[in-house]
Image (cartoon, rainbow, N blue to C red; front, side, top):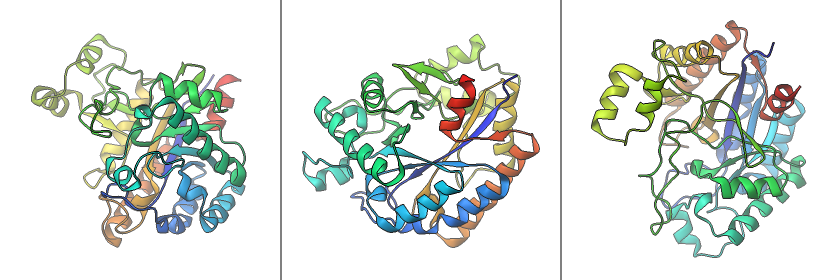
Length: 317
């Protein structure tokens, strides 16, 4: 019988991509050995999804190759504003941070190709992909399939990014509020969604009540229902996240028989000042304590850690 698996995905990117305009320094990558060692200690292999500027930095490549030798997977993460070719003004790109699904057909094809080529050159052909800012749709899916990808992990069930802006002339980010929490085929690619669950164990993920709730428009009433009844949480670490929060997400995933639990973090969250979530050394240390709490609980529950590529292989056996 197939048992629930645990996947760690790391958006492996330049420092503080929340800043506008953003830069391309990759100092945070050089601090990743602490994270890799933690994953190794718990036997949970991470999948590092790297952006163009990381794959182009020789020191980062050397470090990530050593992680690859230890069982980590290296996939691709498309940030249009740092990936050539650059059609628009660079200063505009660093401020707008366009979603991948907002690119023209030719831009999308060329940027995916450039990213894929540099990752393949330094790490081998990537098969796992995540769109920057979760900006994914069927058109992006078809393009990455054409370029050799087998797995995507860009979908955030129950979450709409419509009010998050990229190109000011477009309608905003994708709306995933009705997307499945369970892995599924999408345009020939295996979609492995981020784990976003109701932590109220009385609520069934496939139940009618939650499905209707997910279709509600974002607003005050929905926020109140979420806080008091549904308690929907993504498997991520924020300053306010508690050990109990993380454990409740894992418990709900098991309760709802999810075949895979996916956690994500940005590499820059592990450097002081590298993100809006961790501004000091103490903030980073608190993040690491929460990581240890999560990983310890996953191992305690007997859940096997796998990379995205390994999950696809095991689920198809």
